[in-house]
Amino acid sequence: HNGRPPPHLLTLADLSPEQISELLLSSLTYKHLCKAFSAQVVRTSLKGKTVAMLFNKRSTRTRVASETATSVLGGNAMFLGGADIQLGVNESLRDTAQVIGSMADGFMARVGDHREIEELAQYSSVPVVNALSYLWHPTQILADLLTLYEAYAPPLDLKEGAYHRGQVQTDLAKFIRTRVDPLSVLKGKKIAWVGDMNNIVWELMATVPRLGMEMSVATPAGYDKVDDAVMARLKGHGIDRSITFTNSPKEALHNADVVVTDTWISMGMEAEKEERMKAFQGYQVTNEMVESAGAKADWKFLHCLPRKPEEVDDEVFYGPRSLVFPEAENRKWTTIGVFE
Ligand code: CP
Ligand code: NVA
Image (cartoon, rainbow, N blue to C red; front, side, top):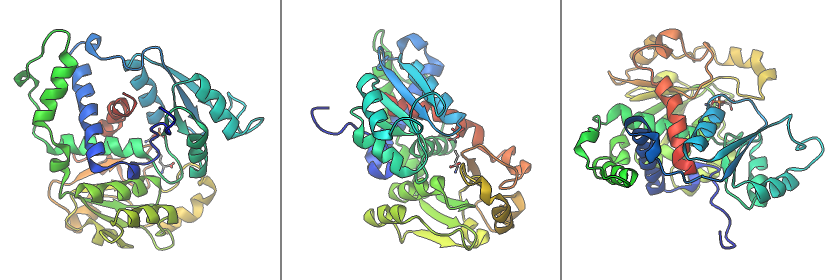
């Protein structure tokens, strides 16, 4: 990286809409490449490389997505759970970053407080991808955007492209770029968040208004504070006033194309469970709630998972509007887009 800092991904707030679009196009290329062509044709850009997966918190999707993504790209994923290495018990984050960074080629890291991922990035000589922090979850929102693009875009007929032996990936990437413009499909759609004020909604807030999407956020009183660091990024992008904040799910859901929620008790907040369950009464997403609020007739539902029944009932979660499982699968394809 020629003395410059390596290209970390700590939040999508650091990327331009064009860069986000480019990641979506690349993710879509790999998705079609792996599904419609032989795995043999995938360019193994991580061949001979190792990605250190530093996870101090539990994970199903992010871990499986990053391990499978690494393997599609021909690399080696080295999982380092909280109990496996010296970090946090016998060794500092700074020393850990320097040592692992001198041997591995990149980090996928879920380390808790956002300060920690920043410190890791500061002392790592190789790229660091944030696998969820207190503030942000960039790889999740990339998957959400790809899922929404696919839900709204007309299906792509790969047969219309021309693919030549030895350059299938290049030909497919070109074909997709002539047919797909993710941002024009997403533009104008309204996202309504109903639930907790957390890393997922913050990452959405810092991203979707810049893509020309509308956004409204309903959180209970007392849980409506946007973290100062997030607010600073929104102001920096000039989008703090383009988001509607309310304590009324009904108001947020009016005219919504997409309804999104997440657990009321994020990892590390288990001690607040009782008070949160009380404070969030009336926030469970149900068909009745969304429809009586006047959402769009074909509204769609997203949830990053893991899901608890409190925040959304089974009828919505397993119903025809729910995109949650394609959304989870897209974690893999978008992580390939990031790692590639
Ligand atoms: N959505 C998500 O990040 O899930 P995991 O915590 O299982 O990785
Ligand atoms: N807000 C949740 C997201 C889990 C993927 C958490 O931080 O636990």
